[in-house]
Length: 435
Image (tube, rainbow, N blue to C red; front, side, top):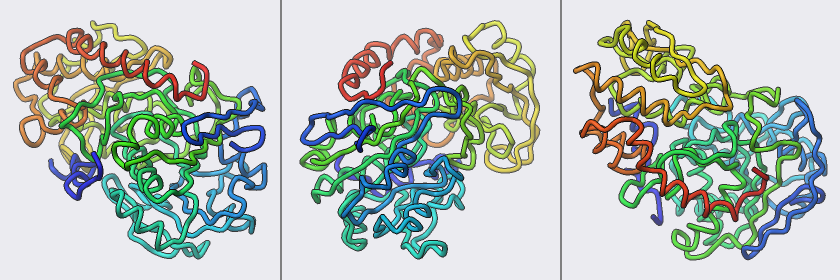
């Protein structure tokens, strides 16, 4: 897929809601060859350093002599004071910023799901912020020319799910950089749900704003690792060539076996409906309920943990309790969403409680929850065009076909294992952190 069309932008999360290295730390990739320097880990809780912290401690030398464009949002902070990297760079006087490119929800985070901040001049820094949510490759290329940038910098906390739009902002930004011969630098951050890949892999014909290329539903990579994967696997096709100068400033003192909640580090909401690390852990699976007529908890204080609809009663929680899914328990719950689906209606359903974070398989959990609903309630249905949304979220029409045929959750989960194993083998060459 060479570009993201206007239609694909509408098929992003707006569609779902509205339709119903551096010295001592870097990992430098030039011409496909990695040069990784020795880690200077700072072990222990609260002590890991994100790529931004490493770069700031080195006086931002990674950007010396460069005019940069920054793709970031409220999660792009340095640990000291939890301040925006853009604010800190500008105040340092050591970095020349030509522009900021704001993703979904915006640079300062003022927009809700499926929305963005319009292009404006940031009052604090005087830097122009461009609206990059849903930006095509050509739009990014235009922005780069207007901003006059040499290097593109990506620093956003991802949550590890294919349908979280920030990684596709990075994908198109990289493709534009490849075409124009621009340098691309990722200031890396942990994957909050760990380093394991899970779930189905997207197939041809099912690309959209929530999945532009063939990765697993829970990809198990950091943004820096994903950038390397994108460059090695996709950029030649989408941009005609790879990013020749791709650098990842690595996280120090963190392992992919460590979930974000285990680090003790402060959690900054990557988006308005991602309030806790627990939300992120469940999101790669529970987001599938966006494709149904159930509330996925938007409009409550526990999105993607509270799931329900007016037609659901105690029987769902009762059946799920007998499934003994790893890492989670289900509590019968009733709630009244203040916005989004079923707003103003009392919904019966469940709250998914995490009891052993290391064992959670969010996609298996959501699949089991859905098959139980199918078997219990005639009122269960898909949103939109005959299951189109669930096809886009799961990356093919297989889930819908097997679900409609009455297959069990175990059969559905088993069906994607061969492609997941192939994806896992492919991604190994691009990983930076030992599993």
